[in-house]
Image 1 (cartoon, rainbow, N blue to C red):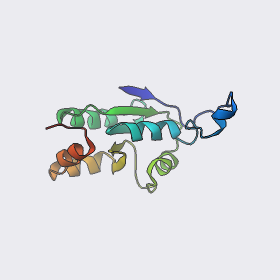
Image 2: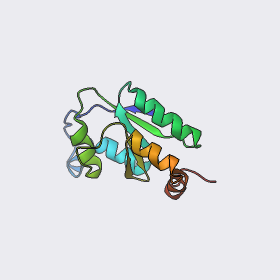
Image 3: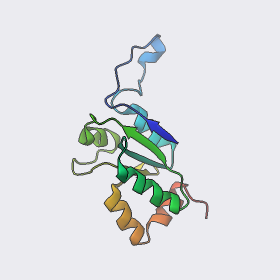
Length: 129
């Protein structure tokens, strides 16, 4: 499933007093909700070839990740900081497994080569082997 979520999202006006409680559409809330609800999520720029590489690696392992694409004008460090408290050194695409940030493509490849990716995916509920 591919989703394109603009960053930063346009502010929404609540139509009722119930909408004032907690707006998940602000500050990366939509992406945060997707990360919390799905076992594997890839967040990257729209049209980025690295997102394709991450997706193909995960598909090869038997996992169908949710891909969230952000616009070209997105602030990567602010987006990642709002999602997981990550430092500014993290870059897109960002891979989340079980709601936790694994890292970018380089970190995902390192975890895969070390043989630690499959256990992480099983623990997150993305694999049923």
